[in-house]
Image (cartoon, rainbow, N blue to C red; front, side):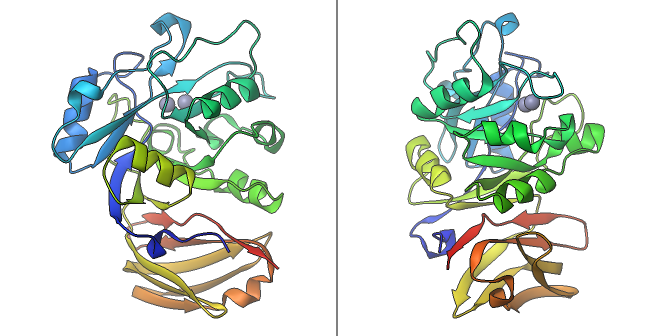
Length: 300
Ligand SMILES: [Zn+2]
Ligand SMILES: [Zn+2]
């Protein structure tokens, strides 16, 4: 069984890992983006500007904007090579050095993903539905830690924010990936503060947060709070903010659920999903907001 953030020491820290400033194509300067997230009560932010030649391959330095109760992770969004549909790849790298080298001539998406991971980054396949990323594309990124199950800007701007279809396909194929929900805000539209992660760590430092992300010690949300998840025997016991659906999802069509009004607890028969493969929790509320756990893996 995979480790469970609710069974780890520490507390949950709120952060957004995917956002742009005017260092690339965002509307606001880095300082102002950081200020807005800090004022909103976020514990951390990563400015992930587009790592492209027209912006001089930026890893935006947000260290000056760290403050009491607020830290930043350095990172960027990578674009080398093309997907099967001939579009430029989008890969998120959280936790890069400021001097991360520009792409090599002919470097591919799997290669730069591997280089980001080797440099210490938490690497994610982002907004797959936004550009119809396929399973074969996703399978080529062996260095990925996570897939965005929700991208807020893609949802607001194109109604293609949901990445769960690709995520479930990858899990069914045995890829040990985690879920991720992000804003990808550019502040061009009302595209901020819609999706974030809650990371379980013992301190609010970039190093501790990155280690927890890589270990899957977090959950993703658009506003639903997960208060506890634990296995008791063959059942999953869930506590959450008031919900209309609490779903435990497994390979293919396997799932069990609790449906109702103002549900704050559920006891789900996890054993019905079988002894092998993954199971993951989604909680939906009456406003259409969700929370997603990372997958739990059963070894059989
Ligand atoms: Zn992108
Ligand atoms: Zn982006």
